[in-house]
View (cartoon, rainbow, N blue to C red):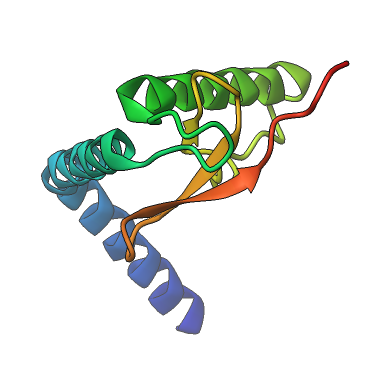
Length: 119
């Protein structure tokens, strides 16, 4: 009886997920798009702590490209075990390559790593 109840609950959960996914997916896409536009808007007003250059939209694009490349490497190394990690890189200074993370609640970029000096 308990096994039957467990199976029934699992089946109901799967059915609900299948029914709600088409409804929830557009909201998730819209939320992600809004978050990105907020990050771009804040980046346009944020000066790099190292070189005083504005991070701007280009800084966010560089970080997005680096993040995609990082995930491709992980998938290539082990496609079965790959799990997307928590993203920490949200902007890269286009001039000096300083790395920034984003605090959503405060709507501020925080310096994560200074560029390495090569001499």
